[in-house]
Length: 114
Image: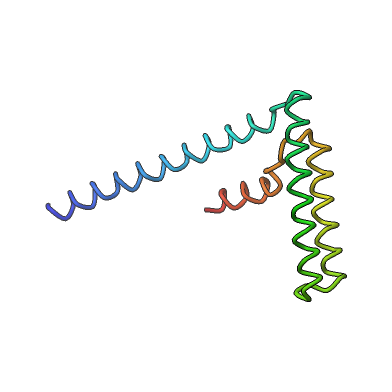
């Protein structure tokens, strides 16, 4: 009788934990969807643009130093800078709201499999 009670209690706890995880997963995606619908004012966009430009300039400086010191080849340094500039252009195109749902479809399929 004691084993049956232990099994039932364990099964109940596992079920409660499993369904709680599903609820947290659903809430997480709702918050992400709401964040994706945000639009920034022109002042906010200009502030973010200035910050991103400063960061981009510093990163270019660091890459330049790596090339100068021989850590990176000129080709790899140029490639890294090109990728950073493309990233900035995408941010600018999206109104400086990051798109974090790049792999959302793949993640949903994985979750369904589990």
